[in-house]
Amino acid sequence: MTINIRPEIEALEREIIAIRRDIHKHPELGFDVGRTANLVAQFLVSCGIEVRTGVGKTGVVGTLKGGKPGPTIALRADMDALPIQETNDVEYKSVHEGIMHACGHDGHTAMLLGAAKVLAERRERIKGTVRFLFQPAEEGDGGARYMIEDGCLDGVDEIYGLHLWNFQPFGQIGVKSGPILASADIFEIQVNGRGGHGAAPQGTVDAVVVSAHLVTALQTIVSRNTNPIESTVVTVGKIAGGDNFNIIADKVVLKGTTRAYTEQNRQMIKRRLREIMAGIGQAYNARIEMDYEDGYPPTINNEQAYRKVLAAARRIVGNGASEPYLSMGGEDFAYYLKEVPGCFFFIGSAPVGREPMSVPHHCSYFDINERALLVGASVFVQLIDDLLIAS
Ligand SMILES: [Zn+2]
Ligand SMILES: [Zn+2]
Image (cartoon, helix red, strand yellow):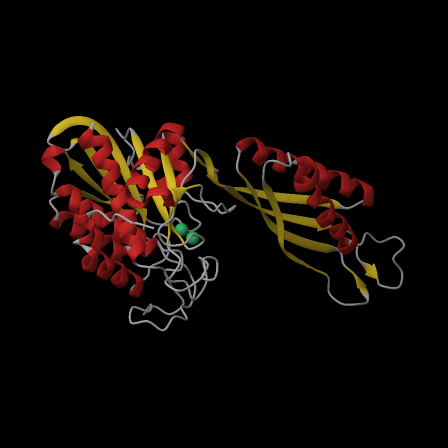
């Protein structure tokens, strides 16, 4: 396996890793990313890049105008961490109790800053504009939407983003055309029955029994309503109700999430949830209600943009660039892709000496192979070279 890190990026190895460790040590949640945004803004300014802060509440946008006119390409990183207590014993361990960069967004920010520094040095040769987006609140609150409302995509022709991916070994880059991450919605169902004595069920409506039927029936959305060559998920992750062994429960609450790669399947799941609820409610004389919250849409890559990423990725890792290890996770990058064509891809980052999958994202011992930062930064630089310099 030969990996051709771009020499200009290789020269920044220490700086990129130092930035990642600094951010890792000082993680921040959601929109509350003041320190990180500050670091980003100062770094961009030091590269001579025009900076706008407070975009999408706490995001940062850098604009690098090339020496010649041409299209505007956006590159995006996310800056937020997760509410997890880090258990790694490393020099750069989080100093903030209960907060940790357990998804790799610290690395995304460091990589994009490294690429920005390299690109700023060759601005005269750039035919067009590079827009650097550093967004808050990817983990749940959809910071991307706030960035878009604040105009971060105004004038942008294409957008690219990446994710460190511990499910793939170092040296691999995963990318595909079409859906690459799923929609991620949340539902809460209330089953209302009629309580009573555990020894006298006649005349009651047992919310526990009704819920049991409901949970079982919901499984058929995936197994019977979804085209078997496509993928959907319906997970009931929480079920709560009842008071004691000898009391028939009058209320049960079920909470769960749905995942789909297409808008069509997403809507189908939503419809079937309601139909099954209504049918079971009628069969057992229970009143069943649901709150359904639309989360992130599916992340769907544009075919041409995908080809550009694949070509750039092949320059860096050769045949290591191929199909991604897919998951039904969600990403708010999906919102950008609903506005402009672009592509989201994965940089294999399983830690040295560890099997891919053994150090998953969102766990207390998450860490990465830091050399993967150089791979990601190299792809960003290669992409801009291909799209705005060589062309
Ligand atoms: Zn995450
Ligand atoms: Zn993430």
